[in-house]
Length: 233
Image (cartoon, rainbow, N blue to C red; front, side):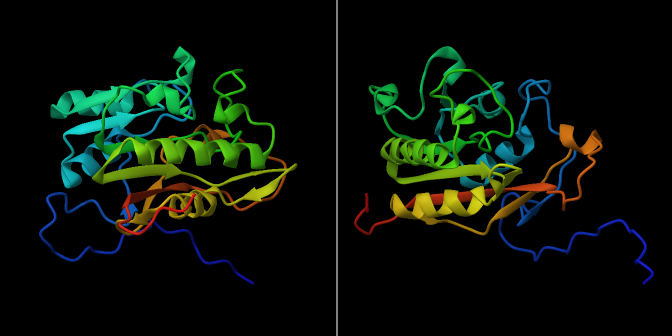
């Protein structure tokens, strides 16, 4: 069988609508990350996606409980949005409800957790990337989502960027599925379509592997809001 030749992917045309950010669609393709955060930080997310989300939803007070290299805080500073950010590297555990005491309420939470143990950020056992098992990771992710829910105003929204993970011990881990399942169980409902973010500049793209697998070249940003229905625990 002769394989089809490789071609440059052409994104579908988006319908015209009243969006203030018409290029923000279910397929997100921006190779330029913007001057936000430290690109040397492993797993750094493009600030362009965060900026486009903020331009669309127009939050006034943002919580970033896993700040990493400070990408979200940099975007907020540029847009004049109040931002509260912290990180486990500074001893602040986003899975502990006491960390959120006296912070007040927010109208938007930006959340970019580790993708299980794809990249280990610290040796702190409270760090999601240090969880030795998938169940342990999901249990702590559940606590994180509960804390973020309680930190949101009733009309607030939460955006989570998550990617799937695979290794020899646990096999393929559909983390995007588990994340949605946990969010729905915490009383969230999905606000809009999934945003499939193309992974430009990933360190794995330049590596050569001896094993055979289907590479993942994207992660998924899902936006949720609080449901008016009773909240399950």
